[in-house]
Length: 224
Ligand code: 5RP
Image (cartoon, rainbow, N blue to C red):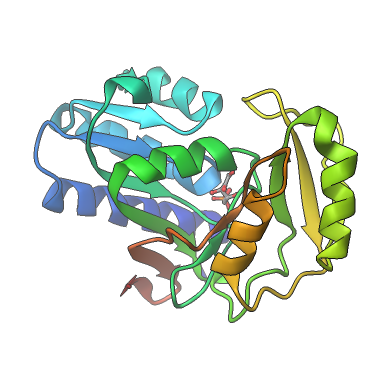
């Protein structure tokens, strides 16, 4: 029986194989954050001469990429990117996701927005019928924390401040418990409309385009 790390490693390698087969040589690749993304970075290092550079979705990812001698560009220098590869905390068969367990949701959403294709890499424990069991991260400007928490309670969620955590953008995270998210795109839009919210961890308005899902019987592909 494969361990969860072995599954993550297998799906990370499948994503690198995808990049090698489908992405034009010399392209820029967007890179996500988290343990699965870390396995992707380590595997990407083996084909680093095939790509021109990367864009990182967090300071941690930037450091790991540079540690492998992979060039990292500021997103503002980049006009197009064929793919963005990242993990998720939960994903549905419609490829809507909850992300931000690592607190990098805002930069992840920004880098993903520039990419033509979002490739999600997960082990099968992340595939769910309904989003919301994993607490939904919401990045908030610090002075708006209490106001946004009160508004989230009105929406039926139970917000909990992620203690001792500051995002790469200098903000705080409210992890929202107790949600059963029937309309992910609707909730994503509603939460983003609250003053003081920077972004939230629902990736539904722009979900993944391709899911590479690691299972004990191999890596499966699901497309939108
Ligand atoms: C970080 C994220 C990650 O993609 C998500 O938390 C999944 O991480 P892991 O691959 O470690 O399970 O959104 O902000």
